[in-house]
Image (cartoon, rainbow over all chains, first blue to last red; front, side):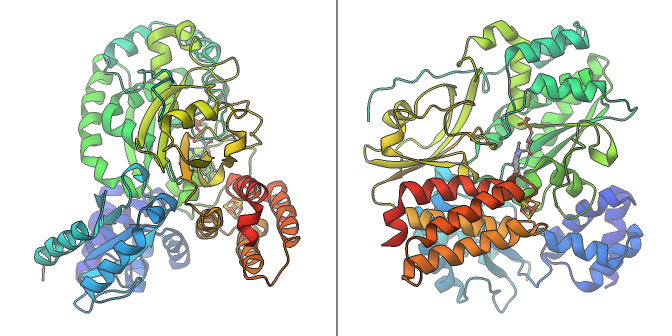
Length: 157
Length: 392
Ligand SMILES: Cc1cc2nc3c(=O)[nH]c(=O)nc-3n(C[C@H](O)[C@H](O)[C@H](O)COP(=O)(O)O)c2cc1C
Ligand code: SF4
């Protein structure tokens, strides 16, 4: 907890103690922690002198500000029409099999979370996905397996 | 595929001397710049198609010591990816447009609202910004641009939702009026312009409104970027003159078996093959309602595609991205899904589709922002043009 508290304090020092700093601060926490817990939201509220309800309300509005537990690597597969036409369901199936989880779940070792998202803005290179901030385009089954394997080796655990 | 017939334009992605454009433009008075912008006929490339010069004039005339110029880089409309390409390749051109807008309206601070999905662009943008701030210093103009990140919410591309988001709140659109040019970021006059609009504004200043006007047609001046995707062998970003027919477009970009083109993304219109020759891409085509399909998203579908699946995909998108603030949109989008599913299953007969069409009309009239209002565009154009596919 001390760690999250000092992270929030550090972020507030960078972005300032204004309501306008709320999103950058929450984004900074997610970048490090991948998720916003109730405790974290309360700390942010305190530091920015807002009510916890205001902070919670804002956080839960945004798809990328996760308030549920997430893995170290959050995979977001684009499900908009072009990616759907070019085989995103197969990509998801491949990842479900490789990671032994279902869409929406996190692996037991807390390494990967598999989600879908709306248009990533790469329709001309579909299908596509995001792993944390990294974009992967022109996917096929082999590529997906390769990418997942390279992340498996990466982790911090 | 036919031979290349459409004229390609090379304005947006050309390399330029930005300091030269800024110095040349700053030598003029604010009124001269505004008049040049208005005369060029440049309209907003973010969707609503408002005259850029007029927007700047309103913000200039608003009384306030603090004003802002914001670049809308939220680019969330399905099928659109040209703004990212601009920021990736010629970000300085966008900053130049922002600086010119700032000079005209009297703003000292600028922001780029960048969608979270494009965070990977940040290191490069910061490098470009550093160079740009050096130019600002060299020309002795007090203007600074920061990046503000979005966090995965399509509706934040709506300009007032964008402002709410920057102010640390849920991205729920505000009532208009007051418009952002009068009461924008932190209640102060704010110009919100699309990435492409700002890059085009810089080019109007470079080549002059006379040359710019020569491109396009009377109601749709200039060139425009198109994000082409779907069933096409040559998907990508293309800069074309406004005013072409959809037939010309399909002849060049289709795969020879094009059944329909969705113009303007999920919030745009679906055009069936028989209407290709009579549909003109620009600001005044007979397609256009309140929400003009000017975002430049062109999704091509061939005869192997199900239009029911297409509509279903768009409706899922709207249900997820609705901010939930107003009932017609929050409930309406969900009811439309239940409705088309019931018809498909045979639980409701085909006349139920007319009832759903009426619902979208109601949404168009009563929803608070463009998201809820524009659901009718794709819904009615897909349902009326491909009715059999909705039923069988
Ligand atoms: C739901 C919704 C999403 C929008 N998304 C964007 C967007 O991603 N980028 C954009 O430039 N404009 C978007 N707009 C339009 C903006 O509200 C606004 O009209 C535009 O940024 C103005 O800039 P322009 O005059 O240069 O086009 C959106 C509008 C709505 C209703
Ligand atoms: S129309 Fe939809 S997105 Fe717009 S304000 Fe209403 S609920 Fe929100």
